[in-house]
Length: 158
Image (cartoon, rainbow, N blue to C red; front, side):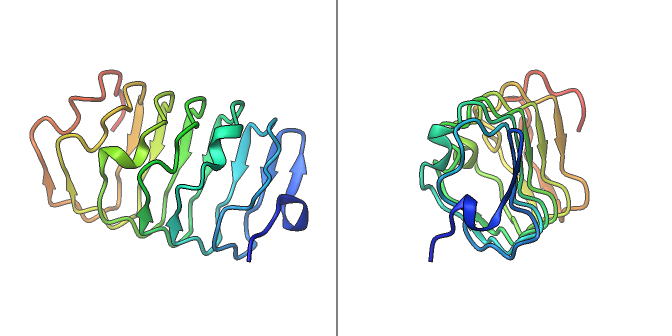
């Protein structure tokens, strides 16, 4: 069953707040003027490549913290080039692939703390050339490959 924004989320100005609603999927029909999308504290386990971000050219911040996300499909963030902050704290991610963030070239803050990530490979952050802050705190990291952060030329805080 699909859920639309008007059925469950709170909208104030350009912020769409769909937090704490036990959602398992992204809501449909998000307003094109959305600048911040709050989907934290839900039950989302897979981020599916549905094209939802292709109509959200004003979007600056996505909060997906405190879900059950274990998989991010390649291409899910296509069209999210204006996003500057992506919060994926406290999920179930066990790996990071460069293709999972394709389309997010503008992101400056990437919060991946408190997941289950064990290894950072070369190319894990391909295409994220504007990232300045990357949080990997409280993961299960045991291997960081040499050059793993070479694709992050503006990284200042790790």
